[in-house]
Image (cartoon, rainbow, N blue to C red):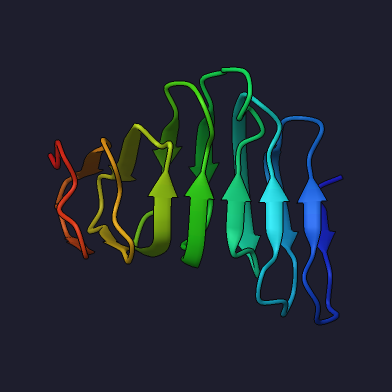
Length: 141
């Protein structure tokens, strides 16, 4: 499966049981769509997803999430462990970033906006730093 798509309105809750590698997920026009990832390294593009979660809230694994497209209006919570988020090049806007210890940009001109801030995260946007958020994160590089 390389694509998960839903055209109808309504809130969707999708849980992946295997690691995603190049998966495209579009959950449509709902206002509270949730995508739960399998523990480990996942790379995917998302649209119509408001909440992107890890699945290790009771145990612990180190998760790596690579976004293959720019996102806007997404809250990311990767759960327990030392978790890493790799952003797609360009402008990304997160509603929140929870349980994400390291956020990486690319070597291009990246912009990151986080509405509700981050907690105990290191952010390295690569070549140029453009961070706009309600809270200055610890360790902005």
